[in-house]
Length: 241
Image (cartoon, rainbow, N blue to C red; front, side, top):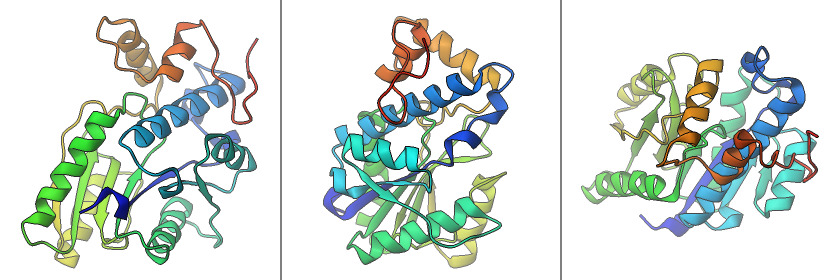
């Protein structure tokens, strides 16, 4: 498995629909800034692996996300088909696009993982590479959330290896999909990649992490939470005064 053959796909829903479960803690502008900061930190981690910028796709129909992709010089993929399961439909389209462009492996990674870093991503890739080196042609390696219920990262060979089932209880749903298809499924334990921000208690834990001596939070999210610099929005402009 060569890194040059691997693509990273990062889905982002419309900004005005993002992180609504944090509405009691953060107003709309603050949520927008948090989404942008975490997304930039995730992209910075991917670029540091290093993924080629052209092999990183932000998946979104939102023009603000497209401007973020342009500013950071990564790819943008706008889903074409309407669906009652928009996340998985968009990711299936993106996976097909990756295959058509020559990608032979795909890393699907959520954008709300502010502790993600290149070291953990390289370790994830190494675990998947070891499975393939064992003579396996089709494989999936997952990282779950802290609760062990969701799927924060999914690495698949080939890109369309498994039916994508992101959403509630996606860990078990993805494992079931692998079993149904006869695909080897491996889980990679990572506290950093398992830390997603969905609820107020997640944000409180992240703030505590940022205040600790071994702060592993991405620089943009860290600056945002420290109050020393409110992260630039999707168009590069400050969203808070």
